[in-house]
Amino acid sequence: MKRFLIVALLVIAVNELFAQGFTQSLGIRAGWVSPGLEYRYYNNDEHSYRGLITVRNRGIQVHAMTEYHRYDLFPFSYQLVFFYGAGIHVGFESWDEAVVEENRSFSRVQSSFLAGLNGVVGLEYLFYEAPVKIGFEVKPFFDVFGRYGFDVVLPDIAFTVKYLF
Image 1 (cartoon, rainbow, N blue to C red):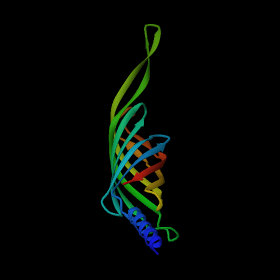
Image 2: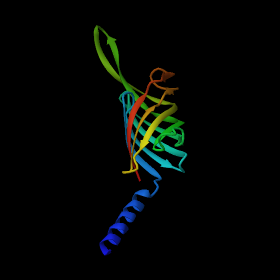
Image 3: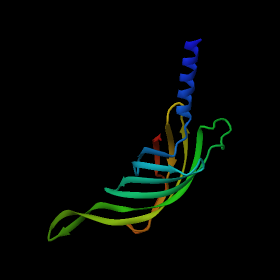
Image 4: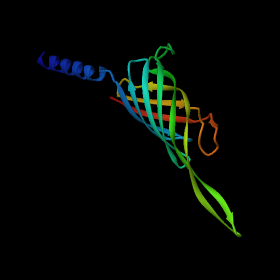
């Protein structure tokens, strides 16, 4: 009986440890256009703020976004979360520009400040057994400054892995 009580208390303690809620996450965004690192702060179950540092076009961009989460959209699993949101980004980009002067050609590195707006839509799977989320997202954006002045990128697709704490 003593052994049973010890095991039961241990199971309850471990269950309570994993039942704690989370308010933050830290993760990796593996994207083709703009991979990076992300931090998310959850206000509640339905809303979060997201900070994202990405690399794109030989430059760095910092994103600030607000996101909304829907846990009850899929009746077959509460662990599958749909999210959407919007935000802004600022940073810089660099590129090589071909220069021809006096019968010789060379390339010159140019750089430019850029800023713009983001949208995001995606699905995440929340593991109950571990404090981890994996996800798939599409983050279209447009730049209002930068190399091309106004630039629209629609298919910024990424796979994400986040640790929740």
